Length: 389
Image (cartoon, rainbow, N blue to C red; front, side, top):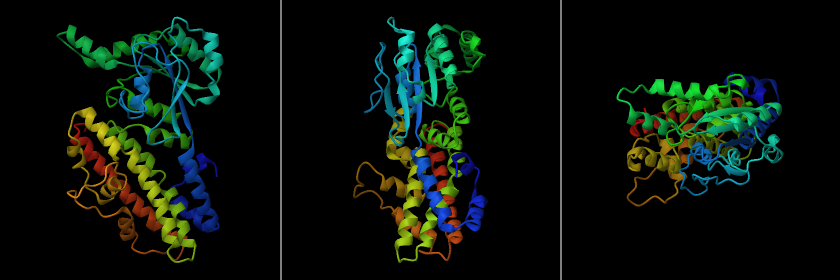
């Protein structure tokens, strides 16, 4: 089963697979696909002018502040001497590469091209904080020759907006953005008028970050799309809805993979296998939606709201159990006890064994769909509490 054909299946398709094939084989293949979905690597190269904000963009993409542990070093001078890989803190298979700046005085194009190793990367993001220049266009042409995708990103848009606000009594933000975009595009028109994405690394919910993710996603293979959308921070309701759509597309795969337990006639073993797959999928959703403790802390810092205010927006038993299970700090005696995730799953499945794989699939599918919906609703409330609704 190829990754793209697998992605075309849904609840009905998975049931059909169980009916038409040996259940053990169908479920085993689903487990293999789950492993592939979680382990596929996505490599994104980030390059551009020295001081354009490459490192800040990489940090923001990974949901980190510039002074966090494992963040890419930032500065007004070139801090990247060699290609440096930065893995996502929750999805280590997603890797952003900080390439040396193309605007250094000692930049040598031929040397750069020999060292860049085009085959390593799925996509290239070319960054500038002003106009795109000759070196940017040169690099884009070389990327095209290698049949790779490139995207122009104009950073520090928040600085431009603040600058204009200081000098104009009558301010039209959309007109300013349009002027910046047209100016940038005029410098790269020889490449076929590629789109230029306007981004603030310190407020991804504004401007074109969502559009950039949409474009990246549309030009990746199915499993790499899943990795991309899982990894980007939830910076707006629109991004939350995108994550919901992607996570829903693969519920059937987790449900089918967990059904293997129903085919093994040993006491207790079926439940253990079933819950392992369910737990893995739910933890993955929890992290992707930004409900884990680290993500909530970062959101609290970014919007300057108390962490307790964001935590209080989480109401569903499933999300609370996941927060408790994955907490960095141990729960204090004053904290209200939470029913364990394992107990919640036992209660929702109602029974510990099934007559056949189809019955197991239906039950686990419904449990996962319900749990995902609860977590989505919780994250909507978190965003509202953060003032991002």
